[in-house]
Length: 441
Image 1 (cartoon, rainbow, N blue to C red):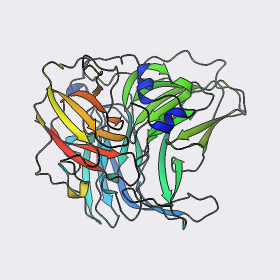
Image 2 (tube, rainbow, N blue to C red):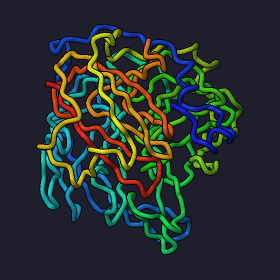
Image 3 (cartoon, rainbow, N blue to C red):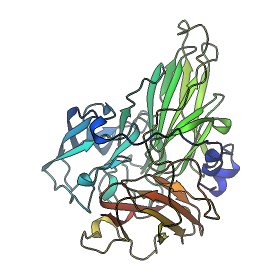
Image 4 (tube, rainbow, N blue to C red):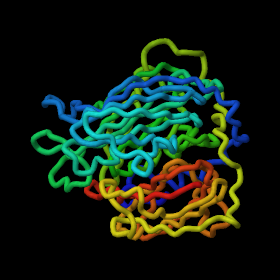
């Protein structure tokens, strides 16, 4: 990742490139064969429906749309049988960010689900990690903005933490009358509001010497954000659902593109009554959006736990054959050719590229826009290549911010057969979400 002007000059000196620079190679093990997967099936019912949020202290609630259902927390190897009911007045289609699978891939495989109808999905949970269930693919210009849902897949192996909390950060644009507008439209005089787990400025209370696993999710519509836990040492454990060699986030700050996820560990070592502000910077200004509080209860143990080992590997490949890779140039930005809005997507359109299973693909992503652009690859995780294309950064991503007028190269192994979407949008509320697709055969 690279800087975004004002954000880089504020009290959030960490940018995505610097965040990743401290990351060692993740512990990698061979992919488990299908017979090793525990295929327990779990039935889940989800509803896309009208909802309300309290976004103005003392004011009336704001109408929004959301995805209602149970807490989405499962174990790696389980398989979800999802019953989805669209109770919205418009078509909808869920995205399972970071998971897939090909049979549930929106637009290229599954058409939008009409209003008032139901559909079913089977979602095998092949990775542990922090994921996002998102209905906003068709959300540009709609009557109301749409909330997202975190989907947590726990490791089979025990992970020693006392608390495992999700901090799902969303942004809203409120008109003077209190109504919220959807992205892909001019915000004009709308005010920016940020929530954590659907709440304004929530407090999270912990006990002395507890070890916290904090799952940060940038569920903002377009905003690239920096999140800082003031005064707390934060250890990065996973990025975009894939384990990392643990490292300390500089100044407790994390940079997240829309859809990006970071799992971080923190030990509560401050005195009872201490408050750690959760600060957010969106490139324009810094603001507090919540607090971590140390309770007055007795410590959970006499001393903090020792340093945590890396999280168990999800089995992504240790090596990529760049020499024999299929190389594809992709232009990004609102004026880039061949990208279309989801409403105009046609499954019969030619793909950006086709690849055989097992082939390594290198994508050169050139941002032609005057502001940062976000790229998201469905179905696969990728390596960010070095500038000289002679190696890669030791981490995996599925979402990448490319700075204005810059090119970044990424590489991934085409492991999963399917017709996979690629998404792109500039980091501006009014910018359209754009899509293309690629084929792994």
